[in-house]
Amino acid sequence: MPAAPLVVADPATMRAAVLAARVAGRRVGFVPTMGALHEGHASLVAAAAADSADVVVSVFVNPTQFGPGEDFDRYPRTFAADCDLLAAHGVRWVYAPAAAAVYPPGDATRVVVGGPALGFEGAIRPGHFSGVATVVCRLFLAVPADVAYFGAKDWQQTLVVRRMVADLGLPIEIVVRPTVREADGLALSSRNRYLSAADRGRAPVLAASLAAAASLWEAGAAPADIVAAMRARLAAADVAIDYAAIVDPESLAAEIDETVGAVALVAGRLGTTRLIDNRLLPPRQAGPR
Amino acid sequence: MPAAPLVVADPATMRAAVLAARVAGRRVGFVPTMGALHEGHASLVAAAAADSADVVVSVFVNPTQFGPGEDFDRYPRTFAADCDLLAAHGVRWVYAPAAAAVYPPGDATRVVVGGPALGFEGAIRPGHFSGVATVVCRLFLAVPADVAYFGAKDWQQTLVVRRMVADLGLPIEIVVRPTVREADGLALSSRNRYLSAADRGRAPVLAASLAAAASLWEAGAAPADIVAAMRARLAAADVAIDYAAIVDPESLAAEIDETVGAVALVAGRLGTTRLIDNRLLPPRQAGPR
Image 1 (cartoon, rainbow over the protein chains, first blue to last red):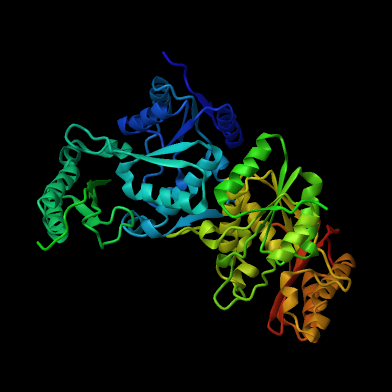
Image 2: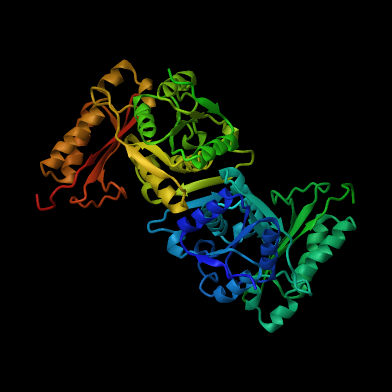
């Protein structure tokens, strides 16, 4: 049985440990999380462990990425179970700072990203991506790893993080790994546990609408028609749609180059639970249809 | 004669050089500048050289800290003379990136600071401190030195930089060095060369108003009376006052604790040239006056 990870709360201690490992020639991989770990996180940790000598996982429920009235207070906190899962994967360090270590007294600094952060989640959740960029910047400074891993489920978030890393010149590689799904297609999310039994039953409709979109895309359907089909399918399952769209996979702009590909994005509410999902649409021949 | 500094334009090359020096046990000091170097900069470089084995000076006229209609285009650029001065001080590296190396294509990320950035220069120059914080963050990532030096002449800027460094957890020490002045009191500034002969003649009134403020402060005068005296003196010299104030030296709040001390801030325009200056007011006994 692998040793339990060392839990570190202090940013300076964490930073020194990671730098010492790197100076000793050990590649360090980092998986930032908000805890409540599931098999999606586990796949990121496994990818990190496969590529690096040492793995750090942060567990920090970041207050600044939640808006007023969102689920910060009730966000699931399962730290002991998280540590068990990480021990089983041979993780060396769990970075679990107190809020005051990430946001010191008098804190007045935010990292603000435009570009890919502006629509979709950024429009529906004002301040969300500023909170994400701010905490990821601080985490990358406290955990100066070689490489960090993010899940494709939060596609727009991966674009925001990559944009920030490129713009600020943060010296870390970003790897995006595929979404992990339940057998019925539902993308794994810490928020799935909010779902009532009835809502859990219809939740796979997000993934099903994306699968239908992929089929229509492959068959040559026009993006507007594909989006209409997605919306109809979600509405039939009584999902309150926040958005359904086919956009450029890098810029999230409405103008797409079909020979490059696209991404289908969907977000909606089932009862009181908000879910998002997405699916990459591969390059296809452009032409009249 | 000391060797000329090595001029480095590429952020990754610069970063690798600084990290290699530090791994070899050499302390590295960093002086960020916009070039057009004067004796104020030279005093920062001398302080860095006294404390560190290797000194890096950046020369980068940062577009994002200039507002529309400000002097970005005509800001003095004297790179060859700057390099001569830095050679004389034994500087090892001059980091002189192109704008596209600091702001890559598609750049959409800004570091935004509230708190001490909100009033005074922040109010008069919207976006200025976001530009400062953004470029200093990027410079600190490209030049991961042990310590960086700033001049007290831009007092509010030193507060913004210190706030950002504390909040993001940037691993660098900030040292603030005293303002260097001409014999007649005028604070050194790259912008002093904009002054006409007549405006140069009356420019010492900013420092004189601060010296008068310090005398009145020491004599126990009330802050409002001191500010009135400063304003009268500046107005008599036909300075278009942007602000004159006595505030808390850390927060720049109007409420001061006289037993802690204060800072007197002044900014105004002489012809087309805008000048700022400040002076720390030491702790004094509080009490009725």
